[in-house]
Image (cartoon, rainbow, N blue to C red; front, top):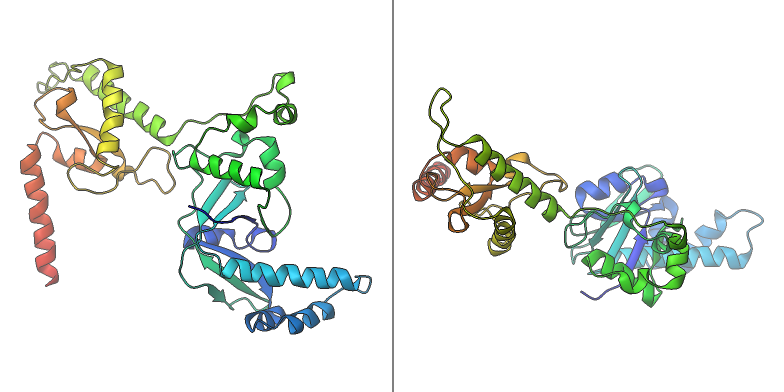
Length: 328
């Protein structure tokens, strides 16, 4: 998606970040006296307010430059649509990103001294589009130098850096930049330094799915405890099953095979353990084989137990039908 790329601090010393994160907003703060002329699109009056608040040793050019900068920042933020916004959260040491939507801007006057100017965005994410964490240690120092500006808000105007940031968010190949001599020098490749690495949530989830399957197989070989446990075997190699699970996730589009609910990945933001993706045998009396495995939400796997797949789905439909009947 084409559009501009901005880096923002979200308020004085990032004071608005927690609200931006929870309410899916990107925001700036304007002093009360600055808001009315800006909202009226009256630049001359805005400039006069800026002059009134300027220090005695500020030059006229500096004051006008500052007024123009902030007047335009307010316009750029509240009129933004489809633009990419970046924010570094130092608490989690992560780079977050979101895109502005077509929704109307939000103005909050609840603070006695300032007004929040905000634009709704898609949910903020600290993972690239391939679900790899955007931790600060994995970002190249050249990009860090650019993103770490102390400016309250700025547009990434450099075409090359804009392409790099987009590739970073897309989870694309960054080698064309990282292999450049100046980038290698900045990182310290000659001194043996390398970028930190991170595992994608998909890779982490696949590893956990395989641990679940192999653990179940190891502990369910027909032995008698207080009752005879069902014998569960893996009827293919672990590599084949792992590849099959990856394909299943894509085929199911991340949805639970029985309920259609979106499954959660291990390590994702706001993860609900009951919604975690879980490997389930379609025929509960069968083994873990390529044709007998589906991906479901963990709670579904717990509830289903040894129930027949179709019978369990039928019972769920009855629950839903009953709930709908109660609302009529």
